[in-house]
Amino acid sequence: MEILLDNVIPEEHPRTFTTNASEHKDVIKVKQAVLAIDGVESIEFLDVVFPKQFKVKVSKMIEVRFVEEAVNEVGFNALPREFLSF
Image (cartoon, rainbow, N blue to C red; front, side):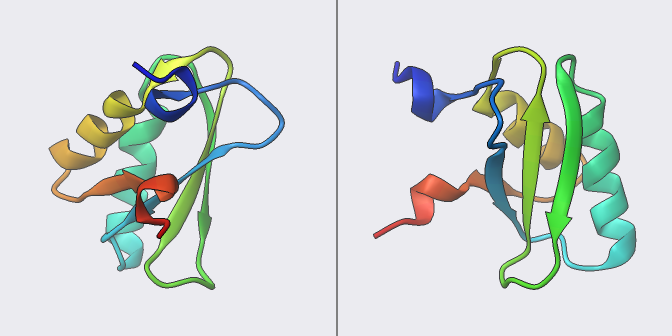
């Protein structure tokens, strides 16, 4: 397991995820689902990029899969941005 790739680490620079949630009501669902995870301090959506992205800031280390699963439960996908780099 790679600590930096498999986890969201508490630091000054939040972890960025890409999502297929695009409408405002969908963004709200994703935001609420991620904020419900123990250790998540904040979530910020970046509306000026496509596909839509959000940044997650945490107070303690959490696994990336917890964010992915929370977003999946409300019907959308979340991928850590690093997976999309070529």
